[in-house]
Length: 80
Image (cartoon, rainbow, N blue to C red; front, top):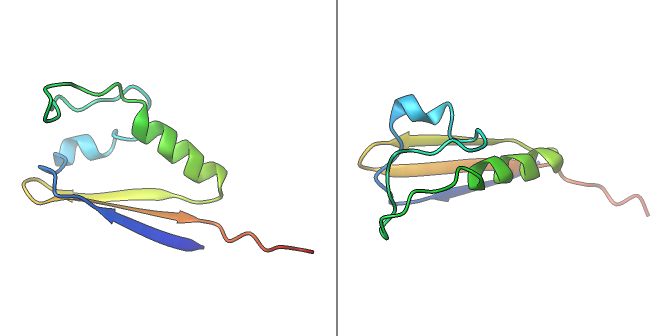
């Protein structure tokens, strides 16, 4: 597997919300810097794409400190 991590400097994700952030149409009640609330499609789509590539995605987050998303993608061996 290849493993990637992406860390942000957001406000973090409340612990009670972490279990559902990858669910389709699930949105946190926090508006972005423009005052808009998301649709709940983005992370669900990312998770589906990663799973279709044979991988998995996880998140760790602390409120006030940001979040780290770690995902894997299966190495595909070229059989030529």
